[in-house]
Length: 412
Image 1 (cartoon, helix red, strand yellow):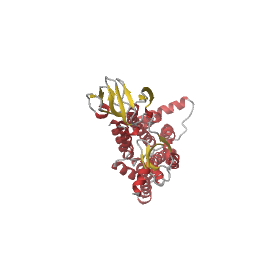
Image 2: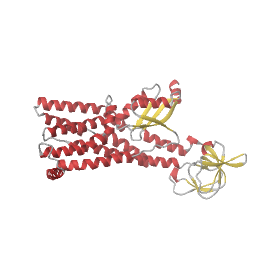
Image 3: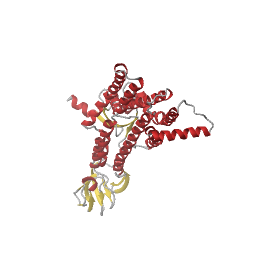
């Protein structure tokens, strides 16, 4: 009986969580929230929300403080609020990344382009009266490629590096991306000025740009699904004409009470679930039931809130209001479907939580093995270790599953 009472006392609340970049971030927020007595929380990365079941005495401010203690920002979402997702920053970062990354990749992968690019650089420097500041032709080209890749690695990837530092003790995919790109970039600088062949500017720039591209596409997908939910929330009626004391009066729909008789004119949406007490008409129930043919209603027939009155004036007695209506329940189910995790999502969370430290350990072990056991050169050993860090970024596991579920529920 005690367990039953405690479950009844729990209140569902939804919070917007910003700053998460992968499913390891989800684990950090969930750990923080679930450490609160009596609180059960599920964080959805794709929807950027935390769905919290908490006792009434636990305030929203306390929950937000817990979210912030994990390194993220939180805000409570009200019943009539919708989540707005923006992809503008992602688009700007993607454009900047592509502008600098494409030439770096082209020049790095084509010897002919390198020769032509290098010759153009030498001519340009000579025209400006500047002699080649490096000791070799290849150093000049590699220096130019480092300069081109620097805005991508240092500016475009800055949010990734910042998140990596913030989550140092609870590693996320950002730690792996940051470590891989910075290692490749710093090694390229070292290799260039020591006249070594192993320069990886294209690796440093491309991994960042590809990650930014994935997050931009993810943001677009989330915004599309969120827009579908916003359109659903906009459908509900804002004001309704009720009969009180024998006189009609216009009131906000939130003030409608069970037993009130309200008027529905042709073309208007039915304000809430009820029973027809006067008038006849046809009702378009397609939004709720999917029926393509309007249904004829007369006194005694039930009508559903948010459906459309076609042609006659109706007077309806409210039987359910607020969160108890069919429309409110459907909306709640959509939000719940976007917030809850499928079993495969929970598997992705568990893998992401241990993946980063495991991969980092493997990269270090790879370097030690190749350099000290296999006798490979320093350059070759670092090259292989960097390859491990860069190639082992399965963000699709943490991103594709929740985004697919989010978009599917939005379409539904």
